[in-house]
Image (cartoon, rainbow, N blue to C red; front, side, top):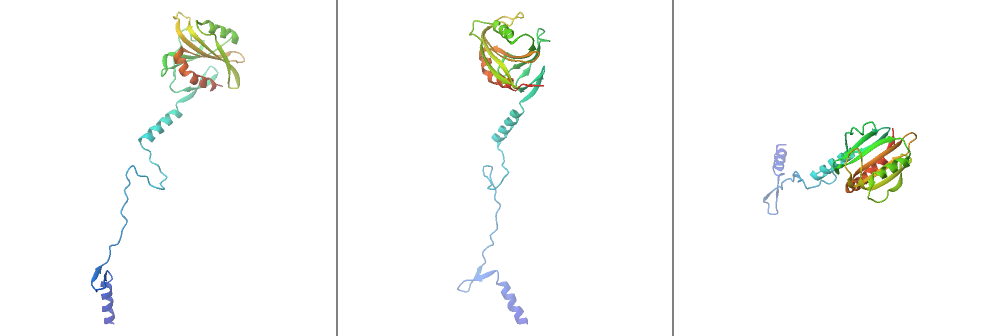
Length: 216
């Protein structure tokens, strides 16, 4: 029994070593362990579904969020419009109070450009003649149609020297893009007026604004 125990102990002592062909003991190879993997900022981790946004991606996300909330619907005398966030409400002059429902400016384009919204009696043709009479020295009025909230509206463009009246001096090389929406009682008028180059720059945005109109 003691002999068996003695040889067992000898076997245990030699389990950590081996012998080469000459009988000399050989140290057991070290056990390989997994070392931690450190990924630099530029390294992607395969299979990782959580993407980390860099500074450019964060800026793009912020810009996208700003764009998504850059407009809002606002009501003007029975109609609501999607107003871009960079447009500003302007105060009405004493002559406009009670006639104009709202006045918007576009400071990112020019301080001289403005958009007015109003309702008025009188026929469409009478009002178009009045608009045309405010311009001189330019090309004849251009006229076409567009659909707004299911109604066929009238779109006109006028350019030349603009005389607004009310004691204001005439403005050379100005332009008006105007829209008239026929209504049951009073027609709805939307006018974009300002220097020709400025109106041309914002006209597409103006038409999108007009097309967004919905009756309250």
